[in-house]
Image 1 (tube, rainbow, N blue to C red):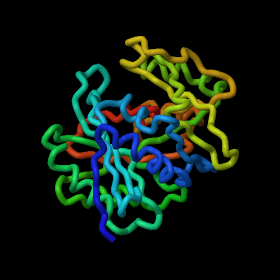
Image 2: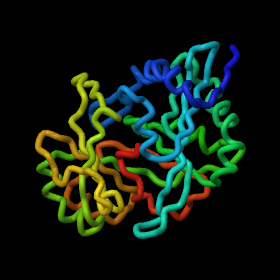
Image 3: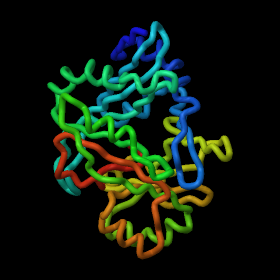
Image 4: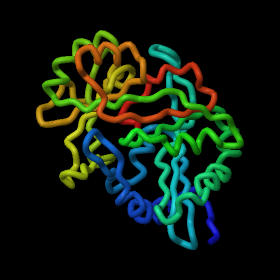
Length: 272
């Protein structure tokens, strides 16, 4: 087996899109008592491009796509009101089940690292935690990366609430987060529930600059939709919500390089 890593450019995005989409199918992630798959729609890469400057890598065995990874150079504030700074967001890491435990992610990272690191010397990644409480294998792998020290930043609690429950807590959210809105990513990134086989009617809570600059957002909670947001472990808002019996239904881990003082409230579920 000879694995070749390629960074997509020009018409290779279109050339490999169907193969990347096929790799995505069948991979599921925990969400409360359910599981879900992801569908990135007709333009697989649109979700990532909306976040920043996209670099996308594929690992090929002959002409078969066996693994993928995205690196998005984006801007994030260290804390509310701070000037946003550049960081790489490493995401969409997927490896075909038949090719796991063969260190293919290392091959991808080693291929892209020298050039990308020269452009920006900090970054982070987010990985959904297993629903059974077992260790996150992606975190274990990332923290062993030999070319740059990577460490665990925090655990994100991911909340999925009904419209009525969101209305109950909107006052609490506004006091701590400021102006609110909701984003529908339907067609760009849908969550397909294992229990129903259908896309979850989903709105992502937005706050901070995206709301204040007037992006097209749904202004209020909508009946029949799930409303999703995330908060870092130990965040004062998470503590306040716990007192109201509002609990996360899933968790994810953030790992980082050279971002130790970031307030990870800057992460929205619409980014993940």
